[in-house]
Image (cartoon, rainbow, N blue to C red):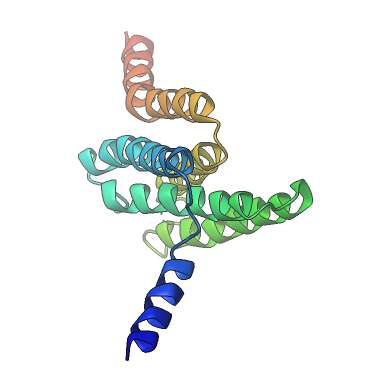
Length: 166
């Protein structure tokens, strides 16, 4: 009976042994948390404006992208393999983004909605990739720039339009 439980515990220990050191645990946790927080910042801005893809969607996209690059990196993948992983993420997010783009009135071919949200999801995936690859400063800077475009861009255009009317 002891051998049976010992085998189960040994198997479980081996299954959960992908993070073996405190430093490695800290690195993985930091990268995933940064991806979550940065994705949440962009998602909050979108949700605040009443868009379909909000905090949870952006956080999941960012965490997912970070995880997709973090796991192969931890497994020792080479640069060419990581390049293919990134290509797959970009293509996959393209499909997710396409789902957020809706054509409005069928008679009006110019009424397309969701392009900015789709671009935001694409940017969020890129931020997640940066965080997952350990490029936290780049991820933070990119988030700040994306937030500025999303939050401040409409205000600047509104002000420019008012100035043109005068």
